[in-house]
Amino acid sequence: MATLFTIPIPALNQHAPGTITCTSPTPQVYLLSIAAPPDNRLTTATCTAILTALDILEFSPEKYPPGVVLTTSALPKFYSNGLDLEHALGTPTFLPQQLYRLFHRFLTYPMPTIAVLNGHAFAGGLMLAMHHDYRVMSPAKGFVCINELDFGVPLKPAMSSIFRIKTRPETYRTLVLEAHRFDGKAALEAGIVDGLGGVEEAKKLVEAKKLTEKGRTGIYGLMKAEMYRESVEYLSEEGHYREEERVLKMLDADAERKAAGEKRVREAKL
Image (cartoon, rainbow, N blue to C red; front, side, top):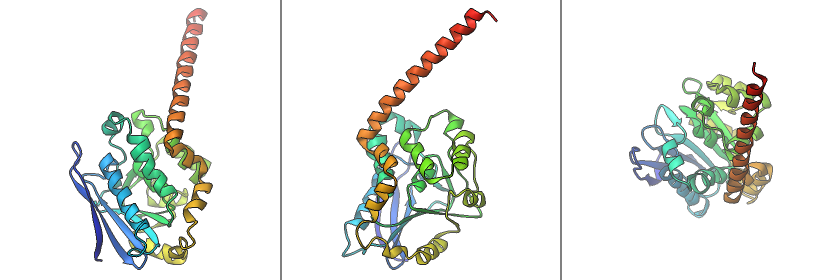
């Protein structure tokens, strides 16, 4: 496949420079291959590069007619290993202005989108895939999981809501409260992914559902924005800061609850 364009990903901290490469495996199907060594962490640099690629495909219709956007990894082991926590926690604007902007872009993109999971998609990597319209996962390698429970980082409302909307209640519980790792077969059975395979299987999905035709009326993104309005609101910058304030109040209330409980235990002298 000939390369349509390449977007550089600048080096950032310990992350080496990388690229987003766009090819077209079939007419009106655009494949964005992400190469951000070593494991496609979602940093400011990576998010910005992906956003730029999405802008090029949407706002150059004379060159790239509306169709379907696929994302995959050029790295064999990881689709994405999620956030660089040090970078995310040390960059106050990262969540609302980079990560959530990227999630929102995919969630409301005016063309169908498919994440082709050729390797592990952990935490933020799975979140990114969930904000696509469809997911196809390798049956032979890789796991998907939400493992924030394991390292003690609560999910933000904007991160959690997409699973509440797009997965069954028991799947949501298993993902979040058990940090369970799903292989391809289990992910398909749980409804996390829509098919097994790679780019070829994604192309078959495009053909079977006639996805290249879906964006032609210009309302595809608007339809999605209404479908997923809860997540759309949480992903807005205003929604982010409002929810941050709510979460702080919840944490304060929990601290008071624990203090009151400890006092009751002391007074009971058990």
